[in-house]
Image (tube, rainbow, N blue to C red; front, side, top):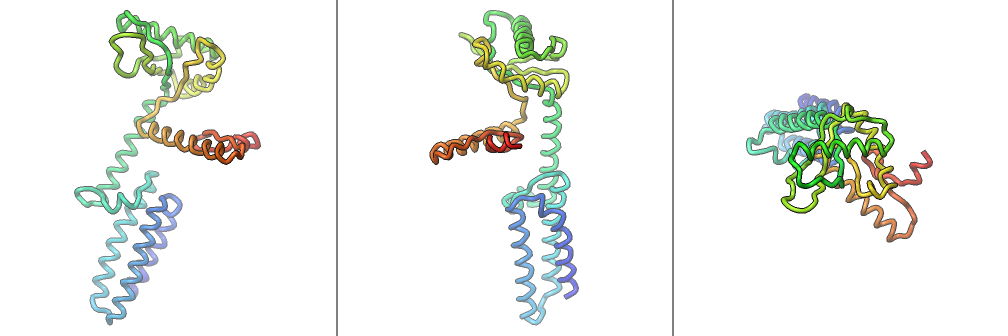
Length: 260
């Protein structure tokens, strides 16, 4: 009986650390485990305590592994879902799952840091018929022209590198995305904040800028845009006149932004 109380107390203490940080699948999984523990306890008591201590020890070990997994994930701001816990990998080792997730998280953070001073410019036509060095020089000039047009007061020395992304077409004009590295992250966001000015000129209206995102960030961005389209389509179908936009990674109503 004391072992059962000890286990319940341990679960409650660890729950306080993780319940606000993990997703609904994990919370549901944890509650299922607790319910199973209590049901097994009742059954074993009904069977006059046959193998009760051994059963509780097994359940305690199983729950400890899961709870420690949740806590390790929370400590690294990682969300673990129920599906991942049910299928942690070929080794079946939950600790390996957590280690892999932590490594992925650290790798993602390193990549974000490496991209923090980068932006991508779309719609800038490449000059054809030149060697790579000459094309790069032309691209740098175009970036400087863009910075001048948008009133940033930035110069060529504020730009570290420019580089086209993707394979160049063999024939015809090309407008591959242009990756631009600037001196720091603050400068990057300052340039991007001037993006709306490009729409005011026919020479620049087809050009737009985005931050240099990781693959995971691009997936999240795509999902967010898809959700925004659905939200706008719903409002259009309902005729409610509500307008939606993306602000700080969330879909919000424009009217609420004005009120704030």
